[in-house]
Image (cartoon, one colour):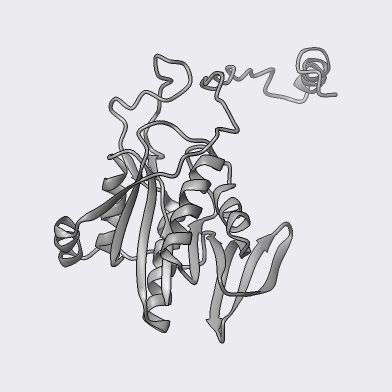
Length: 248
């Protein structure tokens, strides 16, 4: 089976990011980057699919040379090949999806794994866009799945519960937490990943659909206020909620 898994290179969630001087992107100075956590779940599921059904796992990312760090993490986990769709400029979700779909048409996988969303922009769009561009089945926020006889049986999260979906291959799967527990790369895997070449290809051209006009950090929360410590404070609290907070 030919398996493709798409990954993104994102800022570490423990880092406090700052807006860059251009006002439309983050300042990368001092920021650690990582393999998108949801995509890491996708990589693990791709590797488990290979273990059960055979085949090869190709990992692909669209971006600049810094994405190679993330691709090597996926190689260290056990992916067979890595491809960087080179683009030093920024792309919107449609542009990223267009590049990934173009490569998928060339590679010809039977299944493509994504994380349910990338934690930098949180748009949760790219997996579904790629499926639409390819004309494939798509199942999102998957927490359990199996493949047999050219059919995917997936359990996905919905509001208030789970639903079971049957889809025919080829298909796009976007992974949610709970689908698996990603493995840690072994020392041998890390050393092997350093020696494996990363294929570079120019990303397919695209027309931007979204333009970032301004990026700003959220306002800090106002300091809390203690209005009293006994029952007499109740009336004052009601007054403040009515006159200042205007929530009642």
